[in-house]
Amino acid sequence: PLIFLLVFLTQCSRETPEQRYEALVARARQFKQEKKWDEARITLSSALDLRPSAEGYFELAEVMMQLGNFGRAREYYQTALNNDSAHR
Image (tube, rainbow, N blue to C red):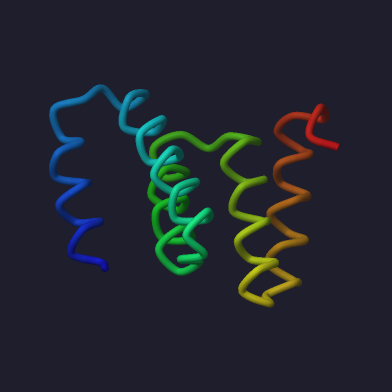
């Protein structure tokens, strides 16, 4: 499964950072729908490296909840709120 992520990231090299961010978040959402939590976590972390955002941290918090890492989920929810109070 991680080989697909590497191929995906390589294809992203021709895009702008914003386009890569959007593509990574979209791919992470697909992983979430497929219940591929680790892949979603890795993909969201890559997206957040490109552009920290409330949206990304909120998505990552949801993944961490599914992985049972409630402390990290709480931290990411708080970071999302700190970046954009509309994520309540």
